[in-house]
Image (cartoon, rainbow, N blue to C red; front, side, top):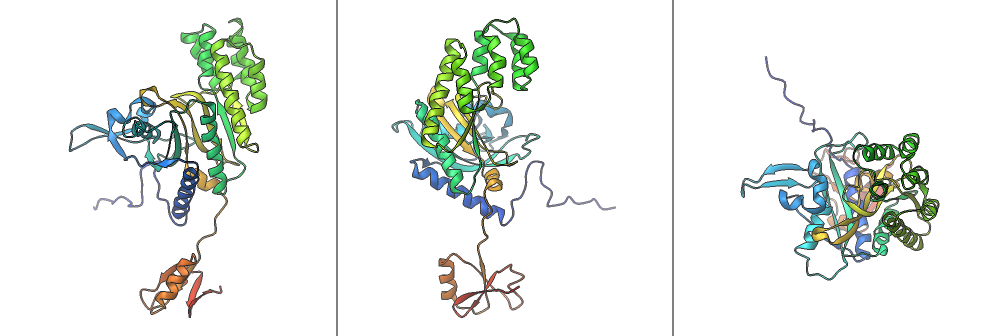
Length: 380
């Protein structure tokens, strides 16, 4: 009895091959995104896939510690981590190798990241990332810039109908603290807010003072940014939450001034998934069911240096972007004119040379054939 051999096409859960034409399409999208970033003065960096664990998980990297694959370096005998997110690596580069560069420092990056496990909504464990970071910029205009540049980059690659959701991850903790709530009481209310359970929030906040009484109204305020900002302005917020609201208003106004047609929403009490953010946070949602296209916001870089940024997910961007026509492929018969083929490549064609007399245009998925010095369409 022979042992059954595993299927070589079987991959671990959450990992997948990207095949033609999608692989080429995604690569082109990444370079187009990076091109837009470069026009706004973002300089590209390329961190390694692996780093020593203690540096990879320092600062904001601690938020992705549970999602980080670890292994022993056979050379140094030290533990290393495989990045689950690129932002902490950019923060390290900014603080060390670029520590003496004047601020604000604008950096961009593109590469792959791997996480230990996916989620029900996002089961992929390997994800492409392309992003921008502003290190050292404290003004609301810095937060607005990463949002506006992201919107411009998405539009440049053919994505339309997307929206920017602004959230304030520090608002809920600040309100619970100002209301004097802690322990089990605060945790129950935070869970109800996280679930958007309006009835539970109203019940748990009842009788717990004027600050807690604000929570049901702020929960209902989520929606178009102008409406949510009006609700925050009308609320009798304590000093800490008031400062958060005023900063959010400044960021949103700066975004609207630079991109007046961009759809902006605001959820004052949303905090899920923004563990290390200390100011406004962003999620860009694509049209229909394409899901999250980007995520980012304000955080503290290494040595508590203020920073803000946005990470785009090219695989999601590819699904949301308008379909791109495939490059025309020209079949070059055996002995075909090499100079003519070179000219066709210069005109944007892909040339596919026959390697044997049995090769045919149909088998090689060609749309054209070289006739003389011209690319002639193949009639179906």
